[in-house]
Length: 277
Figure (cartoon, helix red, strand yellow):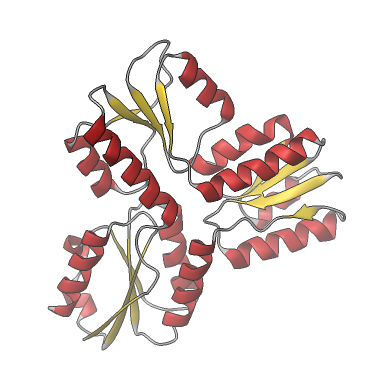
């Protein structure tokens, strides 16, 4: 079996920055350290952080001590303010690409624009973006959501940074057709764009694709969905233990890609296991 590893696989800049920021805090601070919500969507990395004493805070306490790391996805500004008021030392590890989307929303929200966010309604990043958009924020997750959309100018459209680019283009084209005059900002990050393009190209060259990453990772699932949409057999696994040699043995060439929150050590283990088949 030939194994082809994607060039753009594993930690993106924002995830690497969040993980490195947290690990540095572990080395330099004695006070309790917690992340607000899971730092990234990868259970193996979260387990590693837990072993180093990093907790996970799900609710804002009335009062607290120690350091709270804001995860790569960001948080609503009101929640960040409440964390500061609780007495925590805040370490903001929000991905700079997400910060850029927040800044666009803030600018146009002050000018009286409605914000339409194309993204997964329950995703942590989208929750944070809605917090910046305020009462004038709307979320569109799929084309059918447009049937219940009530929109009037002025408005802007932005995207969750890990959205499927083709889906974003289709949805924004339909929004503009129904409600002319909106401003569209393609805020899908460059890392997501490269990964999705690479998957589309790989599916033309391999017999099957293994996608490595956490099941709660939106960008990881998106890679698998793109491959499946191209009729490429796809196997979504969190670790090498989930690989099925009996099913994979029938393919001559297998591609491997990974979500933006998948650490390099897990990718290496998956590739090594495939090479041994």
